[in-house]
Length: 152
Image (cartoon, rainbow, N blue to C red; front, side):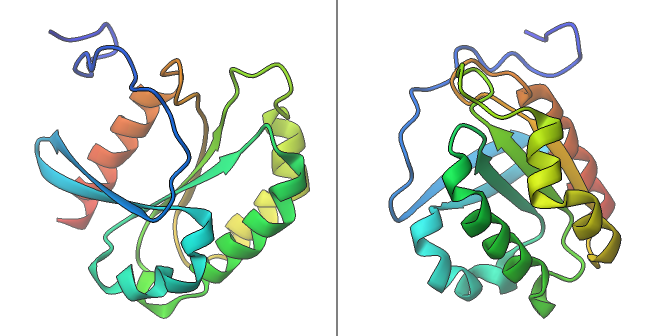
């Protein structure tokens, strides 16, 4: 079954839990792709996975402004990695379903995302999402399809 925007209906989003360690998820988007999810606390070992990485999805908790500076440092470190110089990056501002989330304008300003985009070697796209209610999921899937197609 397809939704009106052309993406396959994925059903209800799964319950969300913080990532501790690493999780693997397979998606069928024209072909099978494997997503390796690494929690922020795993930042010190992220670089051991860069060689196998074709594109990056970087998720930021829009409801936790106290973690903005830490997330920004992690993103800048990732963007400076030579192995990821050609990997397109999707920055996800997640948890927009919560009443205390920061707006996209506030998040972009705090992150200085325009400066990051202008100096990064990678193509960077920004999307607001809610893992809980599925908002932005179709944008993420379209980005994945497009990015993986461009890399083929």
